[in-house]
Image (cartoon, rainbow, N blue to C red; front, side):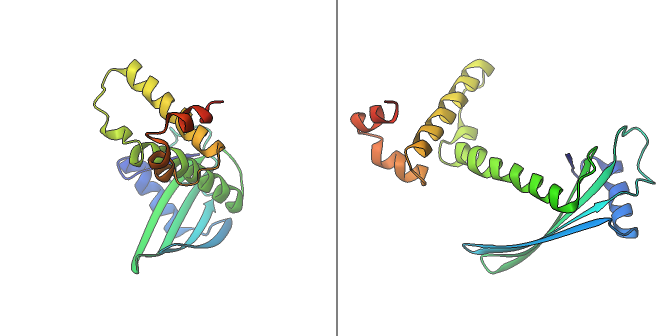
Amino acid sequence: MVAVKANQTNLYQQIQTITQSTNPTSIAHSFESVRDRCTHRQVSVFEDLSGISPQWLGLKRLIKVERTGTRSDLPYHQVAYYISSLTFTAQEFAQGIRSHWGIENRLHWVKDVVFCEDSCRISQPLPAANLSIIRTIAINLLRRHGYTSLTSAIRLIAHNLDAIFNLIS
C-alpha cells in the first residue's frame, strides 16, 4: 500500500475522479476520542480502476480515507488516498493504515520532538545514522523500564548516572 499525495498530480486526480463517481466495494467506520481530539474515520475501498494510467502494473485497489472531527474544539476534514496491489477489505486496510501511524507516532514523532532529531546539525550520513540508532536504543530502554513519558524519564535520570546504568543492566 502506498500513499498518493497531491504532488502526484495525474494519479491523484484520477483517484479523486473514480472515488467520487463510483461506489466503494467495502467501507469501514471507526470513531476515536483521545484527549482534545475526536475523530471519525471512513475507509472506502474501490475495485474500479478504469481511468487509472496503465503504468501502475499490479494495482488492484484504490483506498480513500476520510477523517473528520475536532481538535481543540476546531473542526477538521482530511482526505487521503492510497493505492495497493493487495485485495484486502476496508477493515483490513484501516488496520494497516492505523498501524503505520502508530509507528510514526511512537517512534518518529518521539525522535523528533523529544530528542530533536530533525534539528540535529550533523549532516554526514554515517554519524547521523549512528545517532539515530542511539536514540532508538534509548527510547526502547526507557520504554522497557516502564517509562510512558519519555520527557519525564529524561528529566528524572539525565543527571543520575546510577539510574542510567540501571537501564542497561
